[in-house]
Length: 230
Image 1 (cartoon, rainbow, N blue to C red):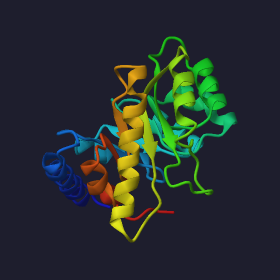
Image 2: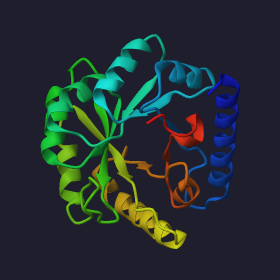
Image 3: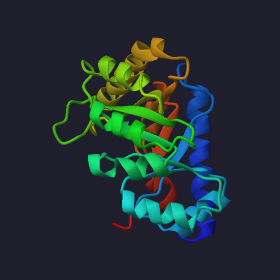
Image 4: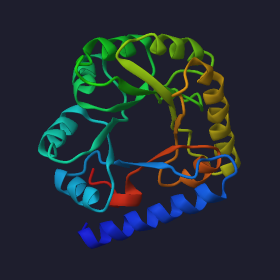
């Protein structure tokens, strides 16, 4: 994609987000856009940054580490948004600013132990399997409070909120209900700390519904870069 088209896509996306955020009685007036840059080149990320984006989401560690190295001259904020394998926690803890997909106490402990002490705490969202899909990662609503308490006790992590990827539904009311449940789940753990303020939910196809239900962060790939390369 050429830079002119990329700039148009980003401007259009920002306008979509602004309009729905202003209309929502629940959501925030400002919503963070995380550009899902997995499978995208360092050149594409550099161009997106030139258009004003600073937050980029990656799911594949080895691919991400190469891009993080190539783009180290830019003030980017890196978000790990994919499933976390235990043998990948060291690289994530060392090179990322945010992790949206913590769903097990064991993984949380490894991230805390492996976070370099000279770096600020790793900003963490707990992934909730809000639709109960066997194919998706995520903690259940019932297990969420205990995991949240565990993460809050770890010295090199800072619990910031929740993330979810609800099942795609033809009936938008079902998606809306899932996002509403996430809003309630966040409220249920906010007593654990004043900085628990993040709801990472909503992607290119459903972000309007998510923002209306209180999303503070949306993760957008195709709406910025177009269809994925692979």
